[in-house]
Amino acid sequence: MDTKEGRRAEPDLQAAVVRLSDCIQLMQADLVHANPTPDNLGHPVSDVLMYDPMDEWASIDGRIILAVGLKCGSPDFDQLLHRASNSNAAGVIVKAHGAPLEELRSAAIRHDLAVLIAPDAADWTRLVALARASVMGAAVDSVSGVRLGDLYAFANAAASITNGAASIVDPLGRILGYSTLPGQPIDELRRVTTLSLQEIKPPAFDVDFKTVYASGRAVLIPGIDEEMARLALAVRAGGELLGSIWIIDPGEDKREAALEALDRMAPLAGLHMLHARSASDFGERRNGDLIRTLMEDPGHAPFAAAQLGLESSGGLAVAAFSIVRPETGSLESVREIHRLLHLVTTVCNVQFNASHSALIDSVVYALLPSDGATSRAIHRRVVHEIGAYGHTISSYPIIAAVGGIAARVEELPGSRSEAVQTLQYLLHQQSTKPDPAGSPSVGLFEDYRIPLNLLKVGAFISESGFAELDDIAKIQAYDAEQQTDYLDTLRAYMASNGSISAMAASLHVHNNTVRYRISRLAKDFGLDLDDPQKRLWLWLRLTTMDLAAEAEWPVASTTSK
Image (cartoon, rainbow, N blue to C red; front, side, top):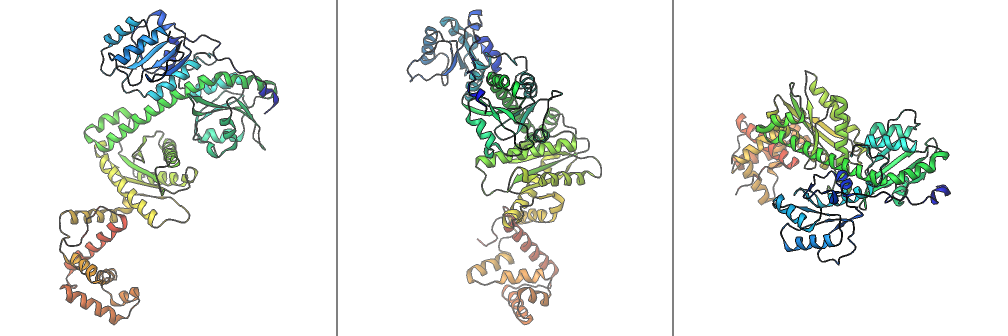
């Protein structure tokens, strides 16, 4: 950092007078003003306060007070309004919780105070962050013409003001927006990250990002080798790190002005990022809810498809994706599954010019369009491509499975069931027989149709009680009690298709030993191994039982009660 940076004066963010009306407009939090008089709307705002009736009453002048846990009409709420009015507070934000608007308006008029009503479902933490960011942001008008939450437009405004190409990055390293002004120079790093919408190295492990996060102001990051130098600023709201802004260094003659401009726009940057995140969170939740409806509620599936603008004339298939991790509750595992969602969305956008994907219950789902005879080849290629990119988001292998094609949206629950069953099967295979190279495990339902259908047959046998006290159950119980291995003998006999020599070779014993074991098995349990139907039943029981144990499928024990 050059010495000029250290001499930069702290930006006077409160030079402009911030009015309550400015903050309400910037918050865009669906607030209802109970008493919107000119005096109330024009009240100067200095800060935000989370109200706690147990705290001593500090300086309230000009503050917006958030009345957490208070209800209109309660003694505590009336006391708060009285104290706030007498202390020249800018206003009070409260949730109605069923109170009529007229009652809230009456209280506001009685105390001559601005009372703002937040939706009952609003998150107080988000409201605090938005309110604080709006107070700071209202004092800065350098990029006030940009629609809140439009980070691409904000990046263009920042690039215009600082004279350098801008990128906005979240704490996970995702590129949330970047400038597109012509004529501004960029380097290969900028080109690669904007194409992939992802930093090459996660911020948590990057020295430059750590330097930026440690500073309360914009800093200069020198370039290395062919990389250009950058100006960077950590963006925060209410103490929470929202991400950072990176500007290609405009040159020594413009650097100081650019650093000062970055410092000035920090509050608005936080406000824009908060709104973008809220919009993104809402969009993801809505998308997830609609896709869940498609996969679980056939009766409302057509409505959900219409809401998504989903074209399904050729049919759709559900794809499911997950990461094989030894644990799933860590912060890093959460980050990785969100990176997987971004990867799935990006690849599907490229392949199908649209993506309908969502993270539901720790599994990423995508709806893959089907059109023509080559649909399954395309589905296979898409999941293989996603699996091949898996190493860029996690050191653990990716698993992916695609259910069968649903001709109508009402049939998507069946495709989802097939995808999940295949995913579970692949997951267990990976966990019991991991690939040393960490290769992805992907496939279509039909690739594993036989073992999956046999698992269903085994579940049906168990649930119907057909397995109780049959020959396999008797042999299994006898082996457990007498420590014998009759069941393994029968399994080897069936696997070798009744060939004595093949069975002897697999067990590494003499042919006569095999003949003796088989004769004892047939005699002690009364088995007619020459009966085709008997052999079919025994082999079906052994196969489904072994598959269930291998896949940890929910098939009940076959031992006798």
